[in-house]
Length: 170
Image (tube, rainbow, N blue to C red; front, side, top):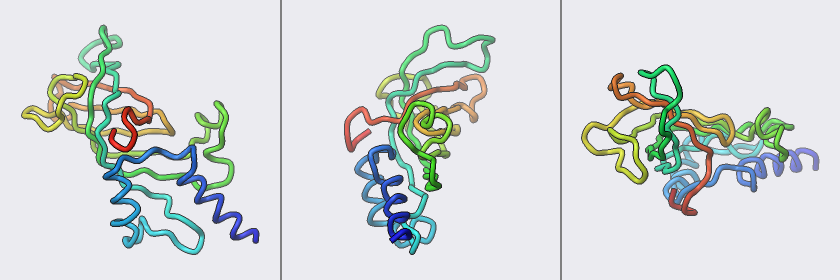
């Protein structure tokens, strides 16, 4: 019974109310397509800690332009395409409710490729000519992206919180 209770706790950590919300494409990929590949397949201990990320986030805010000596003078909303991995920490004590626990021991972290448009803007396509490439990562719900690694004169650091603007979409 203890082993089954632990397995259920791990499923709750990955798929419960404190887990990241997936968009439709991520749900299909993670639940149906990738379940047969070893890093994403569960085992006798419960679910795999990994999820594939492919999303369009519309809520990034520009906070720092590396060419400047201060924070961005006019923070603005930006859109970023994200491609990467999410890893859930399925260890006991991580991902608990409560403000302190969410920041000190979050349920998951992410890392991957970030692509943004040439100029930061809300609902802009990241795949236009002049796209900026970079990296993103998160520790729990707080995400940071550094875009413009392919264009140092146009690089930028962006910040957001993990949430879905429109459920199942982005």
